[in-house]
Amino acid sequence: MRFEKDLFISYAHIDNKPLTPQQQGWITRFHASLEALLSMRMGGKARIWRDDKLQGNDVFASEIVDQFAQTAVLVSVLTPRYLNSDWCNKEVAEFCKRAEESGGMVVKNKARIFKVLKAPVDTQESLPQVVRAVLGYEFFTIEDGTPLELDSAYGEKFAQDFPDVATYFQAGGLVDSVVNQGKPAPKLFAETCTACHRSPRGLAKDRFSLTLFLFLQKHYVSNSSSAWALTSYLESVDNTGKSRVAAKRSAATTGTSRPRFRPPAPVPAR
Image 1 (tube, one colour):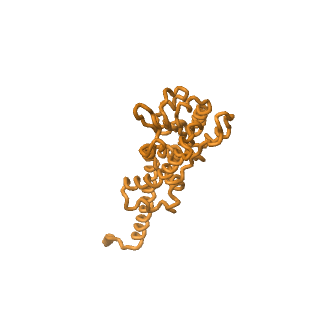
Image 2 (image 1 turned 180 degrees about the vertical axis):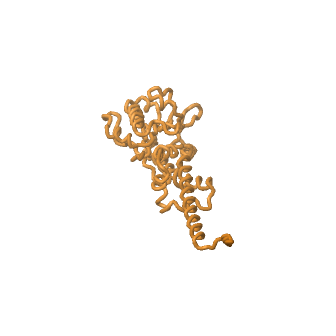
Image 3 (image 1 turned 90 degrees about the horizontal axis):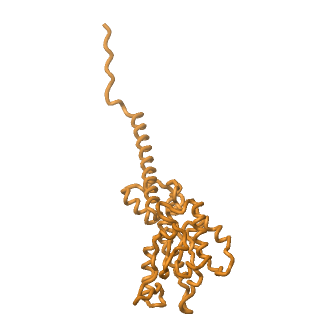
């Protein structure tokens, strides 16, 4: 299925307030880091969006819900405030509902949602069961018994650890799985490779299958299933071409060369 957006960040607006006036909010910086990471992972600009205008006392906007059907993956930034927010809980519930209508909530045994724990939480009972079952990524550390989020306001070490954690955030593979699920290999090639390669012919030449798979996964599709599908397709294109060339050569040879053996001489009549 084709989606207009790759990922939606769901968060409580109070969690985006900077600790110092000179800083950007934590969610704002997380958004920028995640967009850069996923763009590199996916081989193109990641289409990430979030609600940065509406406040907690606004009416839940139908325009946000309507866009969920066109969004591949949801990232929930969990904090105590997030789980106590009716607005945030409704966002998660509505996304799960729309996801079931647009390809299913689970794709290849993976839920179309990631949980980022900006701070420790005591319970997640307000979230749907499918979301509670998903493992979360901790973006905080414990110092002397006190939880501190990965934020440069707490020192350089915390600023450096932020991208280290983000490196292990495997949203790119999930986005790729959701966006490309069920697509035939020729369509995958047309949507991901044609910017660099006009034709699929010749890409598999002089490459082992594994080498071609790793090349495709690195540059075009991060999901392994999509990379293997493209590998098989490209190899079949080249093999088909070789078979046709061999057939033409065989036909040409048959039509121009003399028979290897002469026919037997007729038996003289008595």
